[in-house]
Length: 428
Image (cartoon, rainbow, N blue to C red; front, side, top):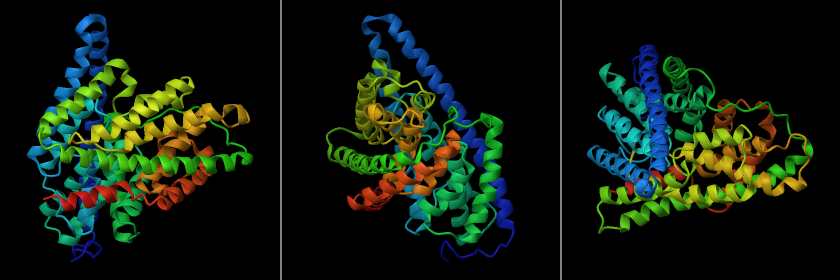
């Protein structure tokens, strides 16, 4: 029985999806809540270390090094717990892997919390998607669904996990159709709809219902700027292709470093990121705080933006190569916001003042870079709009994401999760 075939349990599978969605919402919402508390604790430790003076700079270095080592050790105890997990969800849909057991949950939850809470540049969405998929598959097994319906529940609840990670229900549905399965199947869509609805509803009991970012009302840019956003999309496509190559290259480089064990290697990577954390907390972490500042109009000068961009462009793939649980979406969105604000700052003398603020370019940059790396433009646009509420920027978003997708394709850059999935399947 293939993933697209019904499993023979009729309407019961929708009830199972709804109930499992509630669990995904509570687990994913709790994960987000814990990450916020961990970020606050990390920030307090960094402030305290600054007051110590002298050897105080070693505190963030030790914090992130130990966190990365512990998270890596946890991930190594459970197969495929390291990394994002989205590539594993895609492999299960294609029949290349079996759904993960429920033991994945504590490894992803604890490992992801420790890795991201210590400051590694990783995203919460990967673990949440993977945990949602594992809950969906476990629910199917416990209710004795057929193999086809178990796979459908696994895939649909993965979409619910993404929706919970960003409070973006529509994006969860689009993610399943555009990125995971790359097709629209009515039964799968219905399962994703009900699972996502209950998941987001329950997660709001834990984290509230506010959008992730508060963006001031933004006027629609004038039509004469559309060629600018088209060129911006082309440049962003090239940047995304480079980022994908760097992610895969960092993983390959770590594979070749056989003289250092995985846990020790993770500690070394953590120490590097911890040093960045001590220099400036915005250089480390998932990037929500940085994105929020840029979208709110708190934009540094161009040289500072360029420095943030370069450091996070290099340190993000390095963090992913540490082998801890953690995703790529959130760091990509922060990098896209930086890129957009930087391009706006450089091009400011040539731009009209009406409807062409830094926040507009930051929003478009988030979606365009996501699209260039993941190659899911509709999901990227919906995700950014749901996170920011910037519906006035839909036309620039469409324009830039079209150009970014086409450019990355023309450069021969494979979608990042295709590359990660193939790499995963090639490993013993």
